[in-house]
Image (cartoon, rainbow, N blue to C red; front, side, top):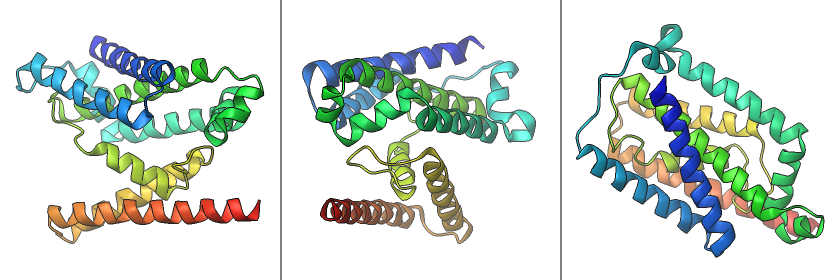
Length: 225
């Protein structure tokens, strides 16, 4: 299981670098994470010389194919349950919502925003590493191109599930529902034999529509206040 721990460690390290850059240099989070994504893919291509890596042990492949191929679903549900509890019932979750809703108010309340954000990005990187390990174990090979455009799927699922791009709003349960809805829609496209190019167009439209709805919802909340 060494590859699993290495993947998790690399993901957490990338998250720490993101958090440090965002909190210390004050660059926009989108730029920091986008730069890390591009750099990480470049490093992966350089390290593997663009060739796939295989030969993983059966013990590692279990996380992608165990329990009659339902292990990824089990991992997904366990992680979702853990963070549902964390975000709803712990101080860490309340601090995260507070920072997302109003960073200045959170700072005045005594929350160490910089340290907390670094923790958030480390956890995000750790989970990204976990997702990568599950994807690799499922196909039993590692390629630098695996996961291309998954970031857009993640954004779409979160926004469809009620997460606000402005921060401070959203629930894990809603995100899970959003991911299920998006998965069903994409599976339906495949079942109907809709061309992959059209699928990307429709997926992009879904993201734009979801963001528009989120913005309208935020405007209504501001007016009501």
